Length: 115
Image 1 (tube, rainbow, N blue to C red):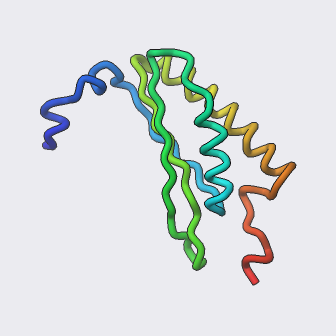
Image 2: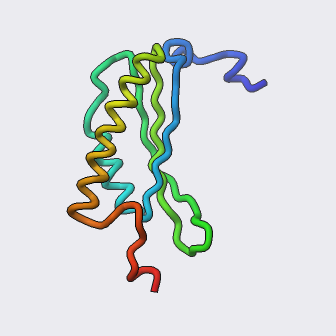
C-alpha cells in the first residue's frame, strides 16, 4: 500500500472522480499547439480540476517519437466529470479539425520526413 492510499490528500477526497486522457500527435509542434489552445480556457465549474502535460512516446518501427498530450480531469461527481470531459472532447475535435484544414493531418506523418 502506498502512502497516498493510506493518507489520501485533501484534493483526492474533494475530487474523488478522475480520468486520464492521452492524445498522441505525430509531431511535438502539433501537440504543443493543441496543448496551448486547449489550456487557455479555464474550467467553468469549481467542482472540476484539469491539468495538462506533454511527453514523448517512442513509435514502433520509426526513429521518431510521437508526442502525447496527457490530460487529467478530477471532479466531485461522475456527472461533473462526464460534463467536463464531453466539453473537452468537443474542443479537441475542433482543434484537430482546424489542424487538418490549415496545417497538416495530425493523424498522418508527413511523407517528406519519412524519406
